[in-house]
Image 1 (cartoon, rainbow, N blue to C red):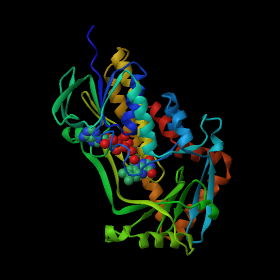
Image 2 (spheres, rainbow, N blue to C red):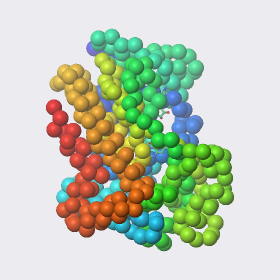
Image 3 (cartoon, helix red, strand yellow):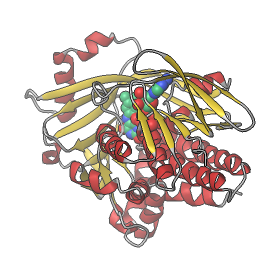
Length: 405
Ligand SMILES: Cc1cc2nc3c(=O)[nH]c(=O)nc-3n(C[C@H](O)[C@H](O)[C@H](O)COP(=O)(O)OP(=O)(O)OC[C@H]3O[C@@H](n4cnc5c(N)ncnc54)[C@H](O)[C@@H]3O)c2cc1C
């Protein structure tokens, strides 16, 4: 019998790798195409890393969770702070979700560790052909097949035939552009600066994850497991500030000193600047080509929803593709994927991350006060706090998607 065509998954980011593993574990062969090589794959900038309980359940399903837990920090609590008077506004504890999940905590484990572990698993799986240093640059599709055009590791043009093609290429998805699918939304004018620092912020009352409101310079502060043990703090920057100036060691030290109100030098381990987009693809599917993760939607990192919701796309899509390829479902399933996951992207991820940023940067003192009172009220009432956590940990979005026909 002829070997079935693989599903071509473009991009070995967290979304492409989870999709590849979830498909292979359901006996679907996968050709995984990644532009980066083994030599530079782990040289990527630090990115997402707050993995919510819903995502941990998915990681566990493919055997990835047990590899990540030793490399991460179990963080049951998170804080909202008011920088204006250096006061804790509210503490939320995932322990309230103990009857909802086996993982009543967030795992602080950076994207780079996730892809390192997941790629090892993918390479070891007999149904996944991982093609590193292979750049996808277009596709053609017919009623029953799709052909990816790539430049392979030897620098040659090559085509790879597949049953379906999933673009998990990240925000610059070539497949999305080739399909002429609008990436609807907007880009914030200011850039965000991330500073990585080896300093224990718990001395100042912070917990592993902190959202700090301030009308002048709001921030987010997260703890990451080393070596070296590090904290990452994000600040918005003015649009007219020069990038090189922003990165100057003195400028970084100054920001940290002002933030903590102490005069000492910090051990800075890294820094990067990025632009934040809030965008959702108008369609997630066209024939045999499907978009997932950042290729389909991008958002501000406040709330840690980008990677998480992308991984949720991957598992939703893997189950549907596996059923279609087994002959247990027809292709209309892929339209349901689009209805479900586009709904989540627009109504949950976009709406929530836009609200999160507004909450932290609010300038009107009366509105700030109202927002803080509301957070306190929710944190102090266990029923309201559980409801709050079901939303922030993305249970609500998954449950709502399940109800979409
Ligand atoms: C600076 C920064 C900070 C962030 N911080 C957070 C955060 O704190 N919390 C959060 O939830 N999210 C954050 N995000 C977003 C988060 O990193 C993404 O949502 C997540 O990585 C998306 O995963 P993905 O697999 O869809 O895409 P990616 O992680 O972008 O992976 C795409 C993969 O596709 C490969 N690829 C791209 N083009 C091609 C091609 N033509 N051919 C072959 N391979 C290709 C790339 O090399 C890459 O390996 C951040 C993003 C950035 C840029």
